[in-house]
Image (cartoon, rainbow, N blue to C red; front, side, top):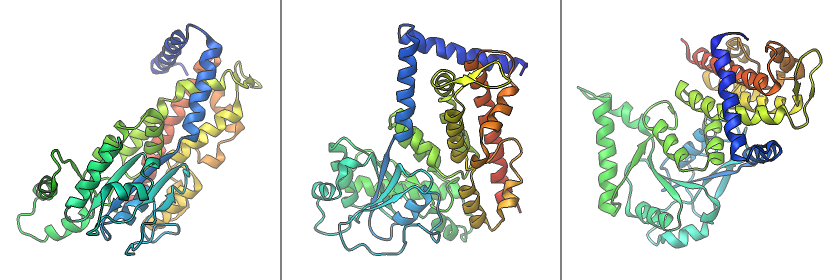
Length: 375
């Protein structure tokens, strides 16, 4: 570790630590205690996302897509089922159970009352609402959105099944994807204005192709209106369907490097045999395993992706060149990584090691994505 860039990385982390220490009046023990609390809050953060709309609008497919599942996979929300009751159904994320998608009853009945509806579905437990339509939005969706707003909750209008629309439109002469998307969005916005929505904003998505259309914009909008802890939960649990999503995940995890390095170099830290530094190895192992899972570098994620793309796990795993899958991150692996650090203080060494690990894991995740969809 002797390159100019590595020295800059160490200097940057030390400057961050210095700034945080100054905010705590140079009380290191207080800063460590606060950092431990922050990381615990992050680990235990719960995110509840409500998805509502009329039956057959694509709610279940959206629930599955946000959980990284195909519609025919075990544990997926059943599609094509008409809802006849006011029951809500919870679908925890298969890898991150603190994140739950809630499939709410439809809003298409004539006797619909927005306020009564929200009370029946216990609106207070949801962090935000996704209001779904597959063709057009109606007065009921607008009434619901207005009531959600009154109750100081966030909501997003999402137009689903874009893949079906685009496939149909491609048969036309002089097809233009850009113009078709503009036409669909204008139609939805006009519906909303007609129904009483003064400033409509609609996100166009396909549950089968997250890397297309407005999903990135939707993710940014949802994340920007969550606090830091819930934003991390949202971003790290999204399916790894594009390089853009992987970059967002990396940025979210990079923001934790300073905190993790501070705690692992002070709280429960012991001398690492053969090295000139101290570290809480078990704590660091757990964090790095979580990072790997967020990147999809774990057995469950690889098995699921292999089924989805019709390839074997060994074929996908062959793309992993620089990091390891979560289950293979152990004390020996960490000691090997730390042994490559020069004789700097423990905090700086761990910071740089974590940054390098995130760089390598992102590169491997991108390579897996390429391997999955090649040919």
